[in-house]
Amino acid sequence: MALVPAVSSPSSSPAASSSPAAPSSPAASTSPVAPSSPAASTSPVAHVVRPGETVAGIAAEHGVRAADLRNWNGLGSYTRPRPDGMLRLHTPRAPIPDFRTRTETVTAREANGDPARECPVPVTDLRRIWVRYIDFQGRVHNGSLIMHRSLVLPTQKAFAQLYRWRFPIMVMQPASVNMPGLTDRSVLTGGYECRFVAGTTKWSQHSYGRAVDVNPRQNPMIRGDYLDPPNTEWWLNRSRYAVGMVHEGGAVEAFTRQGFAWGGRWNSLKDYMHFSTTNL
Image (tube, rainbow, N blue to C red; front, side):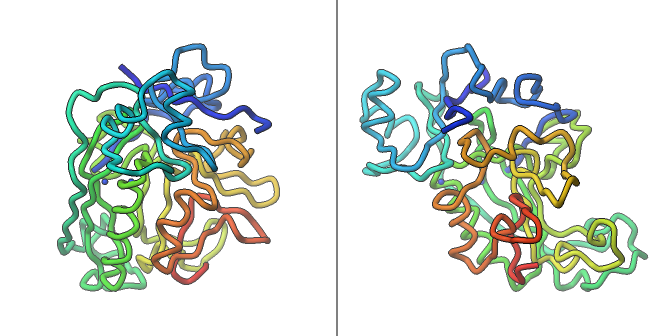
């Protein structure tokens, strides 16, 4: 059964999964959590945490015991969950396992597709980082992203914190395992990618393995009238707390505590998905 999180109205703690072709709005979504708009009529079986909420308050809102809510989500003695986290409102099929992570080297073909491709960072400076994460259906996966070797520990710590906060990630590589049939790669949470900044011949910080994009569809980039990914207008209302969205005081802090800067704080544009150690 798909988790249908409770979300706020428009006015108002890591491996991988993603959805097929991206929808134009939550109401038309084919992602695991559907619909994710306030119009949803299905009784929620998960709750997206908003600022100021407590375990006791969430439990009372949904008519469950606070002790059960802690147990179902492996919260221990937590009384105030982190905003942006997604809490189950029912008994899971299996307990949530502990976070796991590991690293491995990568080949030029694995990193860049074409071994002969010229990129700004030698492949010997890159590492694949495996992390355990929770997807939008509340399922646990093993996903991976490639980062610069100097950022292995900060990246592992950031994803460990997201996992502890029960923040859901739509999909990570290998997508063929975590979401077979995926056709829209723009929904992937990932790091290194040898490419230019869109519309320029300047290397992106992703090309150096120094940036991470988290849930791009739920956290789009907007510059003027340019929106990436396209058809993500619904998520531009950042007062919403919907599954997969990141906010100040919530999932954003998992990265900023580890030395990453957040593109949602920029003035010239807003890149809500983007975290980098260079603030670029």
